[in-house]
Amino acid sequence: MVDFENTVYVAIDFETTGLRPDLGDRIIEIAAFPIYKGQIRTDYSFYSLVNPEVTIPKEVSHYHKLNNIHIADAPLLSEVIRDFKNYLSDSIIISHNAAMDLRFMDVATKEAGLLPIGNYYADTLKMSMYFLDEGPYNLGYLSKKLNLGINSFHRACDDAMATARLFLKLVKKYSVRNLGDFLKRWEG
Image (cartoon, rainbow, N blue to C red; front, top):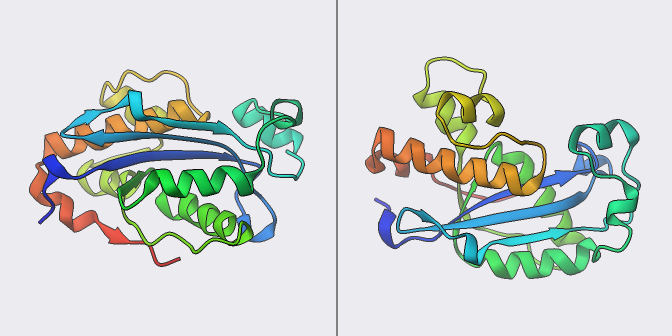
């Protein structure tokens, strides 16, 4: 069983150039908020725009409102991912649709010459589908349904904060003792 009070969780979110890292899509924005002792610690957050050295398609820019001008002077993904991996350390990662975020992370670490992460993670999408009778299960709908207080979405900071609040709401509402059932080790 996980010692919830003394474990560091980190809610993460990436904005990307598309949905397929295996076909060349890359991370363009990273945000993360640690959760410790049941509190979101904004004073220890991580944020960066990222220059992935690939073009953001116009149809994708409409989704998150980031374009090539926004990322032109941002640090390269190979630099940011090293810092982000160090930031995560051995914390438990919290993500909404974790497999997608962690696949992007795998590609980024490999391209930077780093070993992939092997952190434990919990997926708030899967938790929501398990605990809540009906969807949809996207962050916008869940934020409204569960009164998470987030009204903007599709930017990394907003989505990472919504994920952190959703995680805490689910843990509190449905009991910490169920959390261990949702933890998995990422093995790429």
